[in-house]
Image 1 (cartoon, rainbow, N blue to C red):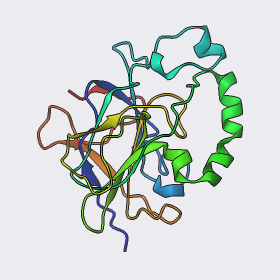
Image 2 (cartoon, helix red, strand yellow; image 1 turned 135 degrees about the vertical axis):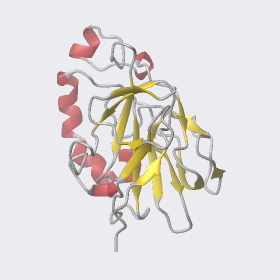
Image 3 (cartoon, rainbow, N blue to C red; image 1 turned 45 degrees about the vertical axis):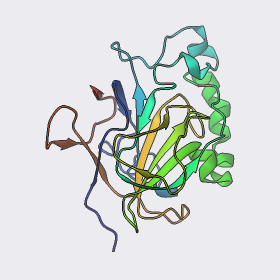
Image 4 (cartoon, one colour; image 1 turned 60 degrees about the vertical axis):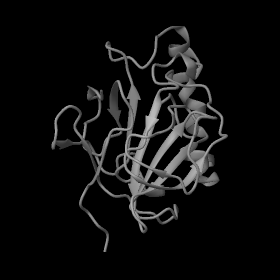
Length: 216
């Protein structure tokens, strides 16, 4: 029987971030149950004006280099303690796409990425087993060359595991977090998640789409 109680995690970053594709708004949060993404959530680093990066003509008409975004290269922390069971690096950080024009060809290539498998979707990523049989926490879209843990590494919550990137199925630098009952991705089922609220001891919450907050 699938466990339905939420898994409590710590936010995997510091600074100001905004929630997107939150299961607080809808389930499945990303519009699909594929790869255990039922209760997944995305976080985008933003400045005090709520922007993920400076806007210019490229943000309206073309692709943008990931380096212009607030979150690109930000340290990403383990949201839970456990043992690393997957650590993938080497995937490219591709151009970002805030422009609706640039998003059209990207959307048309979505089916191909899904057929390719989890690496094409998650990009550089780390999976942490919270216990011998799970649950399993996946942190995705890390920056190429920054994953600093390996399979078998024991991590404590708050340890640095890599940096925010734009690898895999990502239209701008962000962090994707999900919990599953398995790492057999074609059949993995998502688990509900909830986060320790920053600066408030003993209070857990799940941010809604567009909710910005300071994690440190």
